[in-house]
Every structure is written in structure tokens, then in C-alpha cells.
Image (cartoon, rainbow, N blue to C red; front, side):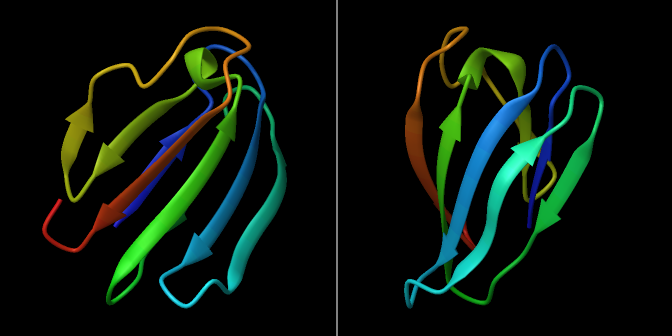
Length: 79
């Protein structure tokens, strides 16, 4: 399970599963939280990476990027 919170600023998200199916594509407003889960892996493209916080399978992830930076990351069930 991956929880994304736009803690500091709004961000743009594109989320797909292991088969390439789009789970979400759009903006997440500042202060909003989205939760995604999959039996395999999840792929994220995050715009304004400095504005969001991620928790993966209950573990807070250190900063994935800076303000305005576009970052692609993937997490599996054992991440």
C-alpha cells in the first residue's frame, strides 16, 4: 500500500499497476491524501515531488525529489 499526501504543495500524479493499467491521473490538492494498493507493483510519476510525502507499506519514505521536480518511482508488495 502506498499513501501519498500533498503535505506542502499540490502535485500531479500518474499511477499505474504492474500491467500498465492507469489507476489515477490528475492533480492532488495541497493537504489531500490518496491511497493506492496492488497485489504486485505500483508505478508512480509525480510532478512537484518536493510537495508530497510517501508512506509505503507503513514506512515513511525520505524525500523523493525537490520542488517542481518530476520523479518516477515504483514500489512492490515487499518495498
